Every structure is written in structure tokens, then in C-alpha cells.
Amino acid sequence: MTEEVTTKAGAEFWEGRWQSGEIHWDHGRPAPPFGEFVEGREAPAGKVLITGCGSGHDVRFFAELGAQVTGLDIAPTALEVATKINGHARASFMLGNILDPEPQHFEQYDWVVEHTCLCALPPDLWNAYAAGIRKVLKPGGHFLAIFYRNPHDDEGPPFRIEEERILELFGEGFTVLERWIPENSYKSRVGREEIWWFRYDAK
Image 1 (cartoon, rainbow, N blue to C red):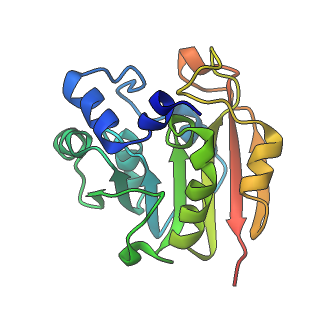
Image 2 (image 1 turned 180 degrees about the horizontal axis):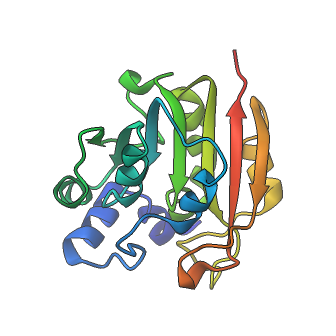
């Protein structure tokens, strides 16, 4: 792992992207696979945490479905944007890092939702990410993730993740409830993503 790539995991790098407006991953609307997920399935309810929430489109989406949603991000400017354009009575935005969550988040969430956070992290930080998810989920809670399985290039970010690695990260303590390639994605991501829905069975 090069120093340049590792630096891209830091708050300074991502804050710089937000301040410069270099946020090509932001499509101005919630991730389409989440809309596909809630059709015919239970919508995430109770307390929901969205990691790397960015400008908060997914946060507002789930808040409008009735959940109490917290968006977590390491870039202050992202949270300012999120508060301005995606504020909602059941939404809140907090500065923080899922790699090292504050104790106030421990075992607090019924659902954790992942979209474009893990793929933005260098793979040598994925174990810390998975550990963070375990810390914040309530026993019996759910982890809903859109994994970027097939990016346009291998340089990263975004970084591809293989099935074997997903199962390594979220094997112990988790049960896979469902997984599939969504029919609805951003145009640039059609066929490149996969939804995984887990239950966290740890006592």
C-alpha cells in the first residue's frame, strides 16, 4: 500500500475534495439499489447509521421512510452540505469515523447502511471498518451494504471487493439474509454493484 493511497483514507484528503467540489461520486439523489431493496421488503426502522454519508441523500431517503437516521462522515464540509440540502426531522449528521467510532455509538443502531464508504477505503483498513460495524450494531441488528464489486479500474478509490473478502470481513457473527445484483443503479454502476443484507447475531 503506497503512502499516497493510504493518505486517501484520511479526513484531510476527503475534506479537500469537498472543499474543491471534486465529488464526482455524488449523483444528487439516493442510491437506486436502496429503493429496490425496500420494495417488497422491510424498510430499515428504528435507529439507523449511514457510514460515510456525504451530502446525505441516503440519510434523507431512509428518514422519509420513518427511521431515525444518523449520517456519519469525517469531512466537516460534507456534513454542512448534508444539513443544508437533506435536513429532516428524523435525520441528524455527526462528525466521526467508523474505523474508530466514539463509545456513544456502541450498540446503538438497529441498522447500519453502507454505500461508497468501504470502497473509498484502502483494503488494509477494511478489517478496522468491519470491527467498527460490529461495535455500533445492536445484537440482532442489520447491516445493509451496496458493495462495489467491479469498478472501472483497479487503482482505487473506489476499490473492488471480492466475494471471499466480504465473507472474511462479515462472516463471524453475521448471517447473510439475501444478496443480489440490483437492476437499478446509477448509470455508471450498472452491473458493478451487489447488495448484501446481513443480520448481526452476536450476543
